[in-house]
Length: 320
Ligand SMILES: NC(=O)c1ccc[n+]([C@@H]2O[C@H](COP(=O)([O-])OP(=O)(O)OC[C@H]3O[C@@H](n4cnc5c(N)ncnc54)[C@H](OP(=O)(O)O)[C@@H]3O)[C@@H](O)[C@H]2O)c1
Image 1: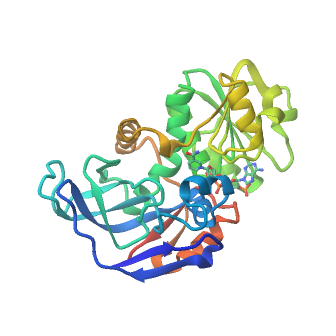
Image 2: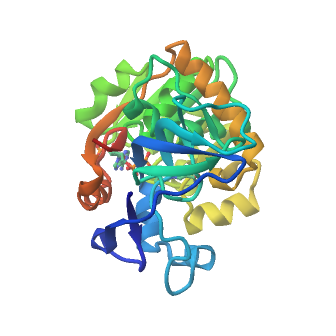
């Protein structure tokens, strides 16, 4: 089977597509023929080994894990002897944490990990990236700040993978949503449910007089120091992007500034959030925004595009 690997840190050109033996499922695993997988900003950072302190976990001189890709959607091709919940032919989707080999033709994954039956109303392409933007943003909005009906949230970077998910989730949770994006993405962000849109090209939300219960900087393009005047007295600043500013304030003022790496959360807790999201998708309350799709053989090109920082929603890798 074909799989994407990288054996050293660096530019997208370190990625190779290699032929490997098709894996055999362990007793508690299912073997999935992958139809679509995600390619994310987090994947590009792990591939590049940036920020460098991340190498303390990823491998100091070279990556310990050489596989790429976290999210996937596909069809079960065989099951281990102890598997009880899934069978041959089931369509499933989910994630194998920490870029663990979903940019490939096949994947073995334990039945109790973050997987679920793919809703019929979702295509494999729409399902594959759900655990990037939706799962991360749902963790922030539900478990970290628990947005309440009537609260006002500002989402910075509303056109990214995390941002397009956050706008929809915040509306579902009953919040009033102000989205920050560039001129070309205003109509998209409105179509996702934003009540108000600020075009960052000609309006800096940190200099306005409006204040918010929550500021979610989903792309790490601002920080707490710059944004604090836009927070209500009890307001909270949340972000999935770590910087020195966020590290300092999340430690010195943890009630007001919160960072989290979703992948470090316990699998059972992520699975609970994931299954709630699956229900929302079944009820057609959420939609995956897809910018571009690439074939597995074009994954280097996909990583170059991811690194522009300009993608709208998600990038999906498809297996023909
Ligand atoms: N902590 C975690 O658990 C976790 C999990 C997943 C991802 N992440 C991180 O989350 C971040 C966001 O990822 P992503 O995939 O959603 O998006 P992304 O690819 O990093 O950002 C793309 C979007 O940002 C917009 N943008 C660029 N500059 C902006 C600015 N100054 N203000 C507002 N928007 C701007 C772009 O639109 P325009 O160019 O049109 O403005 C584009 O639509 C990444 O750094 C990723 O590594 C963290």
